[in-house]
Length: 328
Image (cartoon, rainbow, N blue to C red; front, side, top):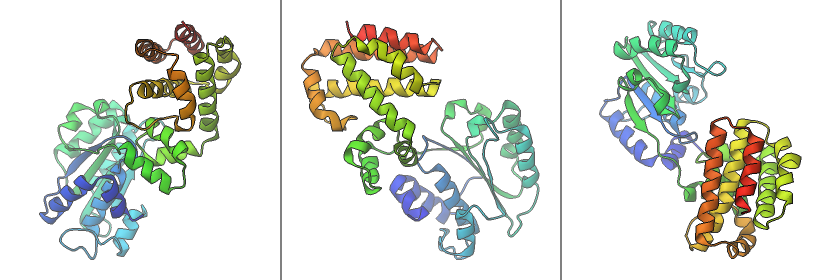
């Protein structure tokens, strides 16, 4: 899929707005693109960069086919500088190098474009170092700062950029795209509840750990809802050996929460995508054993467990206590 086609699919409203901006030659010198992963922030940055360097530009829009456009999209144009976190953060030295580039003329043109991914991962020193350019841009330079966590970006940086929000994909649109990629409805139905990102959904689907994780989570849910005492032992024998870190613990909670959510949706005849579509028959049987109030209590217990995990409470203890609460 060509980059403009992908953007028209991901963010049709933003593409329309930016086309107008380009045609009117009103592109700002600094943008902050914010939104969840997979919503087209990087693609939009590259498309806009290509518009500034295109050799065959018509009405301010990139042709997508000339040598400059192709090099931008292939991350090979010398006047487009991309920065990603070095390890867990973007460090002061990276920003110093970036500022050094700001002071130079473009290699092949007077235009320079800077794309900084995960701007929220800048150290405080690096963020402060970046402010000078944002306050006093030098020459024909445009900066695109990308983030999935706007609340972690320094207010001083936010105030100096034009903020653009990238809408998350709807579940229906993501389901359709996953099906075109060869996934079954049963596979896609769970993934669209866990992520809004096409790339992340595909990565999860191909991950052996995740495939086993969802099987374990469903088994645990089945044991709990059938009031089987093995559900308590299952935490130590099966869950803890597989779900070994905080991210994995959070994933387990989400998988269990989605199973209970499915039951509640079936109870109230709600029209939405079932996460565990493949187990719809079993879910319909389970719903008969629960009143609406009991299901709400169960979901509240899961949400409380998630809160405990976020507070670094011992995971095994949290899961074992959750079993006892859910089996009351």
